[in-house]
Every structure is written in structure tokens, then in C-alpha cells.
Amino acid sequence: MLSRRNFLTAAVGVAAAGGLAACAKEDEGSSGSDSSSGGGKKITLGFAQVGSESGWRTANTKSVKEAAKEAGYNLKFSDAQQKQENQISAIRSYIAQKVNVIAFSPVVVTGWDAVLKEAKTAKIPVILTDRSIETSDDSLYVSFIGSDFIDEGRRAAKMLEKVLEKAGHKGAVKIAQLEGTTGAAPAIERAKGFKEIMDAEHKDDWKVVVSQTGDFTRAGGKQVMAAFLQSNPDINVLYAHNDDMALGAIQSIEAAGKKPGKDILIVSVDGVKDGFVAMSEGKINGIVECNPLLGPQLMDLVKKVNDGETVERRIKTKEGDFLQEQAKEALPTRKY
Image (cartoon, rainbow, N blue to C red):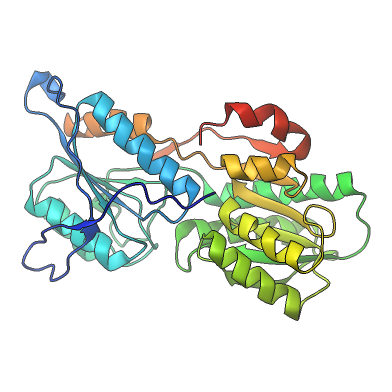
């Protein structure tokens, strides 16, 4: 996944209690017909995005913006640049602006109770997208829409089983793990799901010999993998929590004179186009898909919440798993 910063950042105002300014760009929705319940005032949605750290996130942002425009919503959008304090400030700004609904993809799992209590006091419903949180009060948000990251970790382990079998691998499996952003739900849960399968079914032959965050970025994956190869030159498997880190790691593997996809088997998560290109070239062995195109589902959910309808607490996205032989066939149809 390429990191594309295709939108500018500007300061947003914050409530007096906030004390911080979130780096953000705010976009208005469609200028067409009003789109709230009963044809009344247009729905205003405040969306606080994690950042623009990866191709997956770029696709996710594009999906949200396009879907909001199509729905005729007034979208106020902010880019937190992967900083929780920026996201909290953006949410406080949305509260001060009295938006109808707030949605955000949390940078990390913890530390949201105070600002979400402020939103609840202001009677502004909150929707979580892509990433979950840990909270002492589940009533602080109305719904979560996104992937099951623990299951993605399990799927990655089962994918590795197929990859090892196809490669005819015999002997010890020495795994390097590139983790996502420390404290982020996908990093925690993708590691947990993978370990669950490893401990239950491969306790004697699989071992994670080194594991460190690459912060979901290509540069991070490249840098950390280079260090991995110096400290553990006998690594024969890489499990990356996203494609961007896997793509960065491939550069370091090749620089070390090894062949990615052969000398070091690679399984990653996301399913962006650049990942499929690498897989079609034999450099990634398998990808577990995590669908970023949440915009249309989110806008449907926003309308229901704004209209006071009862909604599901957990809404999952549809995803698939892909091996090398499927990459070339699937590549032309990839939308992100």
C-alpha cells in the first residue's frame, strides 16, 4: 500500500476544554437535495480519521468522502496524523459545532471515555469505524462497523499453513512478525488471533522469533525488517499486520540477497493493489483481505442513527483470502 496524502491539513477549532487543535481538513457534503429524515435539514457528519499512513487508509478515506457526497451529507473531515490527541480535539470540535453524528476510526484502543462522555452529554451519537475501543461504558457509542481483526489473525495463520504446504517446507518455522501501531486494535488483535492458532495447532514447529512494530507504514516495515535480518538471519517466514509493512520488508529482504516469497515466505493482511502486484510477482505468498470500502455502509448507518432507529452493535464487512495463483486473476478488479 502506498501512503498517499491526497488531502490537505488545516487547523480546526476546539471547545475551550480541549486545549489542542487537530490537524484537519473539513469537507462539505453534496450541494444537492437535503438528506436527513423527512427531507428536513441536511445531516452533518463529523468524521475523525486516523491519518493517511497507508494505501488502505487512503482508500478508506476516499470511500467515506464519496459516500457522504452521494448521500448528500455535510461532511466535516479531519486527519489526526496518527495522534490520539488530534482525534480527541477533532471530536471536541464536532461537539462544539453540534454535528448530528460523530464517526471515527480510533488511533489506539484506550483513552476515549472522557471525550465520548462529552458527546453523550451533548446527545450526539458516536459510531466507531474500522477499529474498536476499550471503554468502561458501552453506551458511549452506538455501533461499530468494520473487520474482525482477531479472525483476520486466525485466517493469516491458516493461510500460512497452506503457503508452507505449497512451498514443501519441512522443519522449523521461524517467524518474524511486523506489528501494527502499538496500542491499535488491529495490531493487538491480529497478533492475538495468529497466536491462538499457532499455540493450538503448531506449538512444536512454529515460533515467532522476533516481533516489533513497523507502525503500519512501508518505511517502518523496511527499517524493522532490516534489523530483523541482522539479528535473526535464519528467519524463513514473515507475518506482516498490513501490506505496506510487507512491501517495505521486501525491499530489505532483497537488499540482504534473499528472495521474498521463496527464501522468506510472506503472509500479510489488507489486500491493496500494490500487495496484489507483489503477490502476482511471487514476492508475497498470501494475503488476508481487510476491506476499507466502508463508506456506503457507514452512511446508511448514520441515517438510521440520526433517525433514532435501533441499529446492530456490531456490523462486519465482507472479505476474502488470496494465494499467489489467485492474484493475477483478481488484480484487474481490485478497487483499492
